[in-house]
Length: 537
Image: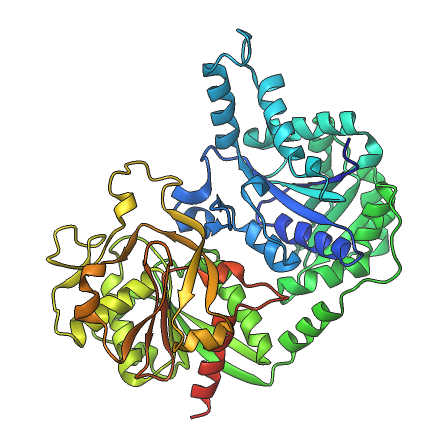
């Protein structure tokens, strides 16, 4: 029997209040007290995973070492805790129903009528306890996606109710995150939406133990007393979550409010007087008081939605603190660069990242951006599709291969520098079929990245279908434009470098997925360092 305790984080009033950040912040505070903690996310949509979702729909798709395509909140979990997540940390309704239906087809339910209760809720219950049953964690935090009252969320809320009854009240805590809106006309904060949200939760059979209240203004003691009275919680369990400049300040704000102490008291665990947050506070100081500033252009197809490139933006923040440098990111839509105006848009930048993506829209703009930074000696980092476009740009503009392209953009192209991976050619399903997860890479001993990583063998996470077409290796690469890294098994080109340039790197993998507060990714740190050097020239 596991001794693991469970914390459930639900949301009310509005979506996008930051349940993931609150969950990660609480986990950080518990981790700082030497408790072993993990976080899992249960999403109520019917997709099996976010892999087939457009970034405009759901932000970026985060990828774990074991190849799971997951919700972007798992990125927050890893960045805060510096602990890898896995497939078990993210479950969707689609995956739950798929599993139950497969069991029914196999006759696993012995002819019973398959229903939401108990069959779906039992499936959810099992998955909610998978990590806890390993015995590796003192506390498992479970974030329930959506808001209380949503039809899609009802099976999850019901499962939480059942689990609390089975595990015992002393082994479970329910945190309810709500919004306290400010009405400018009345010049006051209003508690009624929170009251209604808590009431809806109680109608489902669950009592909120802790209220975390998102607010633009300080909550007075009178307002906290009112919330405690009407929502049936103790006043110490009404936690203010005021807007802050950066998500990395939230754990310190939650510490001030005593969130972890309230949770540990409810779980009948002893809270320590001191927290090991020295490194975290140093990170915040460097973030808030930079000594330098650089301007980085982020060229992508989905720049209208910041969450589309969430991990890249956070990796730049981590790398910036390593150099005590503020990274000012300029979002540039790749389609805006397709009118021979790269100089006008990119001039004045200290570095350019060409972001990952799929499909032909905006591709020529990405190639135009790469040509400009190559010719102007501006530090460049191409990630996944960005690396592929760097190869095509060099083929076209340096090697005279004017027809060079990717079969992703032009299936009939005559010079397919980038082509569908051999392992992908007979695959028809889109979901979960790409080259995913952690793969090894060997670095060339004379490469710049060999020094950046301080090792010759690395492992990085991938998410792609297309690769460099090896039949063009001899024709394309030369003494300046070189292969700097490759997969030891498949010989897949993983990294390219342009040695006739201040700093020019393209990688087939996604380094942004492995950057954390504690360990900024060395590739991003080196890139920001190169941009800082450029800013001083």
